[in-house]
Amino acid sequence: MTTLTAHVTRAWPIPALSGRQALGALLLGLLLAFAWGVPWLYDADPARQQLTRILQSPALAEPLGTDHLGRSLLARLAAAIRLSFGMALLSVITAALPGILLGVIAGWRGGWLDRVLSGIADACLALPGLLLVLLLAAIAPGNFWALYVGIALVLWIEYFRVVRARTRALAASPQLEASRLLGFGLGYLFRRHLWPELAPQVLTLAAFGAASAILAMAALGFVSVGLRPPTAELGLMMIELLPYYHEAPWAMAQPILVLFVLVLSLNLLAGKDPR
Amino acid sequence: MSRALSPSATRRWTSGLGGVLAPRLFQAGLVAWMVGTLTFVLTRALPGDMAYRIAAGRYGDDMVNTHAAEAVRAELALDQPALNAYFGWLWDLMNFDLGRSLVSGEPVMRELGHQLGHSLGLALAAVLLSLLIGPPLGLAAGLRPKGALDRISEVVASVLRALPPFAVGLVLVLVFSVTLGWLPAAGHGRTAHTILPALTLALALAAVSSRVARNAMADVAQAPYYAFSRTKGLGERLSFLRHGLRNAAVPVVAYLGVQLVYLIEGVVVVETLFAWPGIGHALVHAIVARDVPMIQGTALVMGLLFVVLNTLVDLVCHLLDPRRRTA
View 1 (cartoon, helix red, strand yellow):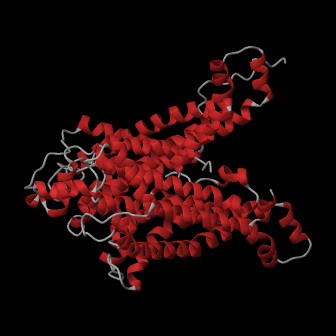
View 2 (tube, rainbow over the protein chains, first blue to last red):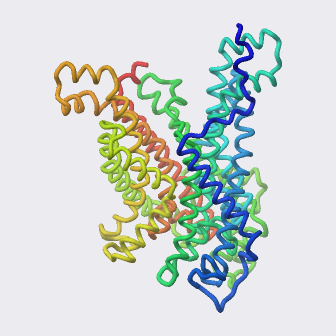
View 3 (cartoon, chains in turn blue, cyan):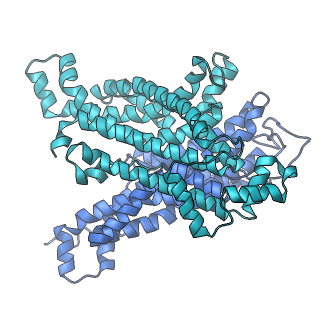
């Protein structure tokens, strides 16, 4: 009892990054700096066509070359990363908030509420995720919001399950019982006892979730049921540039490489697979 | 992207085979209801007059007239109140009446029968191939953690996991078909056509299963019973066969259930890439062509396939691990 002040847990614990997590953070940082830096430093419109200058090799004027309609690949790649990452971030946040909230409620309250919420989560898992997203994409073809709702609907379940299981275990723990007996409110208990335990797992899930959101969007673009041209989107760019592989293999390689580095960096950042 | 219903979620009814099957049966019903409801919403929620749009998809934009639109309206019950039409829709689904494809005019059931065979063939080839690559590699790596094989396979697995199946497939096509010219890029019919799509799916599956097998084997190799089998004089080979293999197999098989999600999702994309005449290809085409009965049929079959494969995994786990049966 003498070391009462020794362990002050921060409400937002930032875990020390391991080697591979640092590498992931570095790669992600570089990509995002590229994506948001390009429109600043380089005047280019991802949709501007220059039909006299199609499929040009990388040169000083066009650092990454041009595509089959003479659009700047530099500008298109930057726009595609902004779109993919923005969508991933948005869907992760909207999946994590209800996921965590409902998980805490279900784990804390138990009883019928827990059973109902778990039943809903199981129902969302009955179909493979991409199938659900595909069906929603079919309802509103080429619509960003349909993709986003589908992806968020698939992602929230993971947060719900992990948080619910941890909360259940924690709710029965002696330290929480002591705090409760002292009369602290639910908000305090969450900040002081639950969140520090949940945060590392939630952050890992968020990184994996962002990676799968990006992959899902690219996969739908690739089979041409996702976003529509002329949007600069990684999967769409791949399928657009595929017919020109012989003339411009470097152009084809760029979206693949970017998608690979983006997903790899998020996977590295997530660290150990929680499964 | 998502996870399969994990075994722990269904642990409530654990005793006996019925405990394995009952939740899966429930899941199958849920799949049918969700697919039915979503496709019903699909027919209702589209902007414009759905009857005209579908007629345009069927007969071409120039051939649409009121007569064609009214025929479509009657066929899809678009003129009835929503709730009535919804129950009618579900009733047809319960009677396995999936209607006719709006594009080809064939009954959906017959088209699905063709495609399911092709998809199952591809999925089976992919799973077998991945089992040949992944677990043996993982077991070898797990016997010597931190060895050269372990490190190399870890790097390869991380690279493969960061590449979506369509990118892996694309790279394989570009290398083996376009550059080397060894294998056909797309199509169907000969064995050579199966190799690239199956390999695409198998590589991604093996990337995960090799790591799972590696971790399972490393755990087993450190377990007291494994040390004891060595102490009592069994050779390395015998302890591996008698004590290692089956214990390490349980997580690998259980993880196959999680990977099935990946397999089903991969089938959609890989079949489209390789023009493989299966369910996933048909689903994507149906979505592009607004062929509502085909969307419903293909999504339903894929969802049910997912449930059936999961059930098989549950059963294999049940047989492999006697601890589950008594728990």
